Amino acid sequence: MKILLTAILLSLFVKPVYYSQNDPEWGGIVMTCENGKTNVFADVGCGETITAMLMSAYVDPRFTPDIVVEEIYGYQWCRGTGKAQNAEILEEQGFTIVPVIGEVERYFWGGWNIVGYIPGHYILIIGMRDGNYAIYDPDHGVGFSGEDKFPYEKEDIVLLYAVKYIPRNRGV
Figure 1 (cartoon, one colour):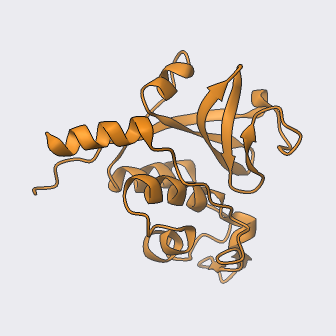
Figure 2 (spheres, one colour):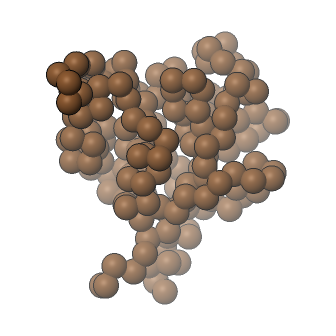
């Protein structure tokens, strides 16, 4: 019961940590596909970066993007990650994933974050203000939909799923 109460309070009052996939500390990490093709993290690491944003806030602060790539993804996604793969990894780490249905605002009131997608790129939506999404974009920074820094409009964002950290009893 104590673990569940702690998780609920965390989800209501703790916001994800923002990381940029372009950070010099991990932006140059080489990702390699099975066929030997390579890419650097700064070009393909948005899914892994969002996973790190969530995991470092709710699971363990040591989960920066470089640690997430090393320990969870294994440097093997030279073309980026997939929606299902990212959701499965988050579920394995104790997050609950649900589809976004109905009014988006109600998810934020309940302490949920939403993973969004623009063709070829994942973003994290952490709230709303004046009808605009509060966005953590691993490539373009933090702000609200409609700002010039984001090369897309609110209408371009596909809401993939809502995510909330609710740890399961793991036999402890």
